[in-house]
Length: 140
Image (cartoon, rainbow, N blue to C red; front, side, top):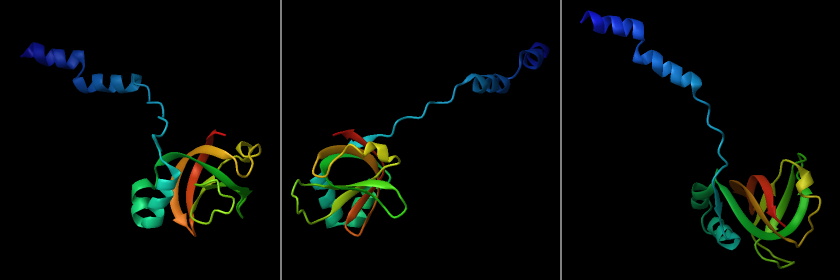
């Protein structure tokens, strides 16, 4: 028994070894968020049929979809955004998606009516707009 005690005292405890492992472990790199591809007409329809259910399903999640640029502008706080229609109709009247960007440089080469694919994080629906934050252009 004396040897077991001496081995535990001089050999270090398993607790100490666990500390060593923690010190040498590198932190995990941040993963890119998982992006769900959605068909924009279905996405808009889900919000139109039941906003609460759609927000439960999508809020805080990243989505990717294609649509047609209705408007390229900034809101009253200076945040750049795109309004995106689900259809190419010039006079489309219905719910559209409003994508907010951190940097307007992604938007300066775009034109109204252009088909575009974007990704972003779903926020909520307000006044007929489905708000998407942290957007980026995937294809134009």
